[in-house]
Length: 368
Ligand SMILES: NC(=O)C1=CN([C@@H]2O[C@H](COP(=O)(O)OP(=O)(O)OC[C@H]3O[C@@H](n4cnc5c(N)ncnc54)[C@H](OP(=O)(O)O)[C@@H]3O)[C@@H](O)[C@H]2O)C=CC1
Ligand SMILES: Nc1c(N[C@@H]2O[C@H](COP(=O)(O)O)[C@@H](O)[C@H]2O)[nH]c(=O)[nH]c1=O
Image (cartoon, rainbow, N blue to C red; front, side, top):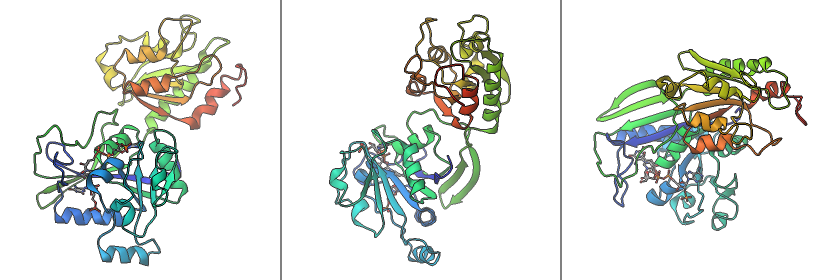
């Protein structure tokens, strides 16, 4: 979405993927040169975000340390320090933590209404839902003029940014240390991650390896091509009193595995169902495939025992790209929620939704 800041994730990890050890003091994985580079990244950012877990565990300052970098910011007409940002569902943050008490800069806390009232004297508390949605956090930051956001962790926050497809870049510093303790926090937990990332930089800073990646833009141009193909397939649907939908199952190399449209084969068939009926649900290629559907896959239906969401979940298809969320005409659809809850990645392309509505103006209340 335009207006959101560019999001750079930054983390230092051990060779075995940990952000810290399980002890009470912070494990320094970066060396002096790496910390200096991270300070430069801070100086380039309009805002720095960490999760509430990091505020509690590390009591970080989140300030640009170098006086020279601070002077450069001021000389460029920018505030001396970036805005500090955190997210919390519980609101359990100590107003006396350094996040709030050090640095003459704005502090933003994204927290559900009523959960962080004790922080309103030391920060601007913003309600973007319960739990706070990171896409809405980015919309709000964009509206506040934040153009570049540095996310410094911890693991839960990095996982969510990558899982939700909200990160643009990742910088990883890898220290020559093994932590080897399952109680310690890991860089990433489970998630439906975009893959592969594009490696843009490999460097050494002493004994620390610095890797930088670009996270592929989603939807990609291939995603848009296939989604448009799915939308066009709805023109093949026979006249119907329900939704006219098209679906394509495709691979990242451009192969189309199957297509379908509503009413194909049987008047009650849905588009995703028609496409999946042409494939073996255990076809190993489905583990890399994307289901493109002009409409959100259905979650409940009277006409057939299995919903399209269920049919997708019975395959290994990891991604669904769709244009229009099902409006509440027949049922309260929960396709997106169920797919996401099952660890599948759902990418909505609302910019193409009007084309899907145009194919469905026979339904009550639907306008392009
Ligand atoms: N090596 C490195 O580069 C870094 C290491 N670390 C280490 O990582 C550890 C902390 O990581 P971790 O425990 O994963 O914690 P995080 O910093 O990722 O914070 C997790 C907490 O943030 C809040 N939160 C996360 N996502 C959301 C959301 N979408 N909406 C609302 N609240 C949200 C929740 O707070 P709440 O519980 O209040 O609801 C959650 O418990 C520490 O040991 C720290 O030292 C941290 C940063 C960098
Ligand atoms: N341990 C660790 C990092 N930890 C990050 O640095 C924050 C501390 O900020 P401050 O109090 O301003 O120094 C901490 O909360 C976490 O986000 N960063 C790194 O680049 N390398 C490291 O090894």
